[in-house]
Picture 1 (cartoon, rainbow, N blue to C red):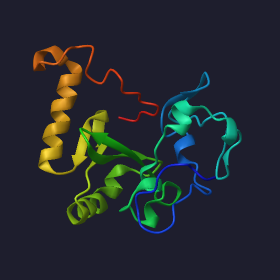
Picture 2: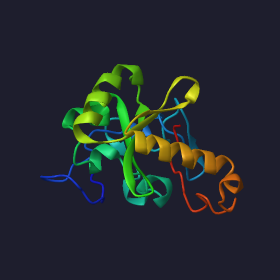
Picture 3: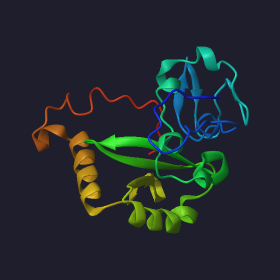
Picture 4: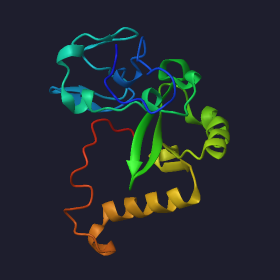
Length: 178
């Protein structure tokens, strides 16, 4: 299956191929009224093959999902979700790109040494859900401070000088994991 997303790396664009991790029940989404929850794959996925209704899949959340591995100029081939057991969601915070890492099904603890080394060598920021679903970071100090401020503003916008209905009001979260 080919995804129409601009590739920001060198060489030819990556393709999903036989990877269907984003649809296998490691992320939460509602696809045309059918829930995809942790442990429950999308109703239309044929695992290891692809979407059975790829041409007519909905914009939200399916077409809007951006796999970090597909679009990354830095993540290596072995981090493809069906090879690594992790989903990398490409996200942005005030224009600073980062990856949210989701267990799919491998445990994040097993990946932490790799994330730490990769972060230092490539100046790439990662966030993930740690114990008790607490947001954890393998990232620069500046990114961590900015992300924590955004989280506080989202919980209580008016206490930080932002109108309560404006912060993240236009943000759609088609897939959630944190």
